[in-house]
Every structure is written in C-alpha cells, then in structure tokens.
Image (cartoon, rainbow, N blue to C red; front, side, top):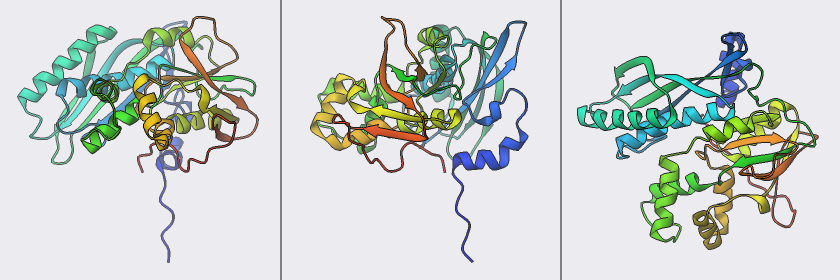
Length: 319
C-alpha cells in the first residue's frame, strides 16, 4: 500500500495547528498575530527561528548570526507598520557555541537593540547535540486596525516592493560554492554575501506603507512564493513583470553573465523586503511597482517581452 503524499509546510499547519488557533491568530494564514492592546492599539506578535546549516553556516560570524535572527523577525513587524516593543529569545546551542561565541553573539544583539529601539524581555536556553537552533518572538505595537494583512489585495491593485530583489539568494549561492561562481568583482561579491547574512528591516518605511497597503508581508521565502501567499489569502491572481524588477548593480552584473540566475532572483528567499499591494503610492516613496493584481488565482511571471515564464516550483519550503 502506497504511503500518502508527504504534507508540505502549509498543509501541516492547516491540518494540525489551524484547529488550535485562537482570536488574533488570523487563521495562521499570515506572518503575524494581532491581539488587542491598550485602547486604540494592537500588539503584533511574530516568531521566527534560524537553524545552523539551514539558515546560517557554522562558521558565520556570531554577531551577524544574532543580528540576522533579530532582523528577520523585525522585518515582519515592519511589513505591518509596527513599532518594536521587545522580544523573547530561545537558544538551543551545541558545545561549539561556547562563551567566546556567546560574547560575540550577545554583542550583535546589543548593537541591533540600540539601532532598532528594542530590548530583550526573557526567553529560554538549552543544549542540543544536533544543529544549533535560535528563535526570537518579536512584539510590536500598531494603531488598531491599521496593520495590513495578506488578505486585502483586490483586482486593480498594483504590486510594489521596497529595496532590491535577489541579492540574498545570489549571496547564498556564493557562500555555498565557496568561489567566484557568479564571475563578479570582489566588492559585488561582498555586497551580495552581506545582503544574505544581514538583512535590513524597513522599519521607518513600513510605517509609511502600512496606511496605503491593501495587503502586505515581507519577502522571506522568495518573491513568487510570497506573492502567491498574498494571492491565495486574498482570493485573487497576481502578475509579476520581470522588466520592472529592482535589481542591485551586483545582481544585474550576475544576471548579465548568466541569464539562468533569473529563477534564483525570483524564487530565492531571504530578501526581507516589504512586498505590498496598493492602488497608488505617493511620489517620492522609495518603492518599485513590479506587477499587478488580477482576477483569478496563482502568480504569473512575464518576461520583458510579455511572454509567460515557466519557473516550476517557486520559493523555499521547509518540508
């Protein structure tokens, strides 16, 4: 008798955990939970973990590991226009993460606590004989009803994003291959690797975007996959126009050398830019229109000529 198909990450959540969800959990179909705070406010709650050899390398600088851990959570608060309040930290560490490692790790946290105006509130620590696992639960605050969810996109909206796309995916490719796989100049290689190791949560920009956005989230699992989450939650279709994609100089140079890297740029994760839908945005807001919301379902990707690109499965999944 054949085994039933293996459930993916989102099927697991739907089957085993969605029935447990309470008020504020948004059906476990968003990146955050929203619970009522003092009158006129809501708290935004987000938990994300990073695992050694999955999300970071064993020899990555400990201070950068710490800063990435905090920033990937702050990125979700930014996508909801929230102000950071505090965070909880859980560490499951191996013997390799000794006192010297922890001193550098805590220094990284201290640096970003000061940068983003957030403080540690508590947590847990334990030991593991497997891969080190680090988790943060970030807490933010937003005016009641102003945090955009995934489910508000409507046909006629445009699709927008902050920053540039694909840098982190290309940086990871460089780290995995341990050589100049993309035939780039040294400064461009360093830029891409830094973008992978140290994302930049768009906290200030997120507060300007939130009142405008019909739907919003950050790009963590790849543009195609994450826009697909918005489309699914909103019960609409979406179109990405590759001619509009905002690319850094380093990414453009890599793509010019190898056009096959376009798939990595579109589907690679770890950008942690804000992806949102809105009819219009004010002139001067530093965002790029990359597509549109349409009737239907799923995500269609168009090449510069307007032809549909076949990418196959797009985006990072854990299972």
